[in-house]
Amino acid sequence: MSDARFEDGAESPLSLKAETPEDLAVMAALVQDAVLPMTEIRYEPRARRLALLVNRFRWEDRAMAEAARRPYERVQALLVIDDVQGVSSQGIDRQAAETILSVLSLDWQPGEDGTGTVQLTLAGDGAIAARVECLNLTLRDVTRPYIAPSGKVPQHPV
Image (cartoon, rainbow, N blue to C red; front, side, top):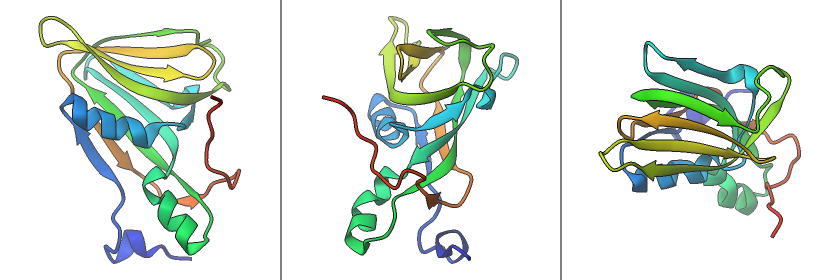
């Protein structure tokens, strides 16, 4: 089955760049509830880049899916953080390759000199923090959307 969104330009795959806190807030909303295995995290110190291949819920399509009474979708997307000076993590067993991580939030914590930290807060009290020279992130869909396995919209306990 072909997907017109990728073939005739009716709806292009998502591709965003974040260089300001406002840009990052939009990106954060789109990666909320993304999941990824530990094996899909790559830190390249020489390239100063942290890359994560995530399976994200297509929040931007939720209302249209509901109106058309079609299934909710997920898509694989590449989240890249550039200008990275260092990466740290907490609450994550980096040796457990089979571990699936769930993204709760993506936040910017500015430093005093224009630098700062991009933090991915994960379910289960985990976090990945990238110390960066400046905000420079990209998020790009790399596969066609697929039906969300659960068939449900992700929910958060209150």
